[in-house]
Image 1: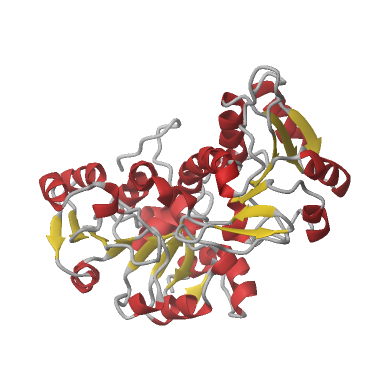
Image 2: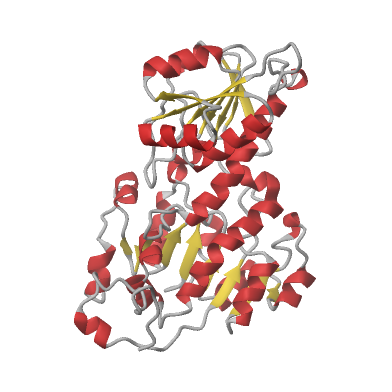
Length: 407
């Protein structure tokens, strides 16, 4: 049956499948008509698939439809997409009509809902902190199989798409903080690394995950004094080892957070509750004690935010000042470096797009692929994630049961 793995068998979740399902295995493979529309979300400059990714998909015999100028903000030309094997079409309507798989960066906006086709497959970000109930209702009504970047999780617990963007966001958080610390931007008028005879800035990072890792790396590289705060001791131990004890670590409780806030020049919210909407870790009262001209970068704003004073901002209007502290709370931070971020997204998404093409149908792919099944939040008119049911008030069904009963 063409099995390949460490054990000599193809990995398709034998523990979940029934014996009958394995015996009835269909070797037919689905032809993917991949649609890449231009992003219309304000300040979203990324594109889901770069020309390099189009070439890989096309070489596998699939078709790719790209909306004209979809990659213009990343400096990807229409000619580059055509040379890679894409068919460039003139409108989003054409993309949606021709594609059975739509890949976007941002979740569809209301003006895009009517473009979604019945039984189409959609892969995009969702942003739990601002998810729209009408989007969920639309994909359910149209029977769209919808997967979210935030939910695509491999067997080893890795979130590959989220991680690719988190790496960029972590580095950008420090770069952005340095800018808003400058005198001309209303900051404290200090440089992160200090200079001879002048101490460095203190950067407090809330969260020892991927964002925290890359933020710590960037801040240390610029010479800042870095404190990392997290709820899990094992994560803090790992950071101390990785960074050779050049960071100060503390457990995440009000005592340490309040002490750190009083001396922080920069606080970076880098918590990731993995598929949940988070509650603020830093209270308004603690923010009030921070130094005037200090900077808050809330990378976690797309999942609710780390700071009680945070509210969503945008690249065109990125900051606000409250209690003398500059707040930067842009949810799609990697869009500021759209070309780099689009390449990173492409690298993360292509394996899952090709994985879909290895199976006879989206249903077959979800049944046999753990990562794709984990990523699904809507399937054949049913909501399959409890967190979204709690946010929207809609009911949900376990996707394993839906797939097992062939609904």
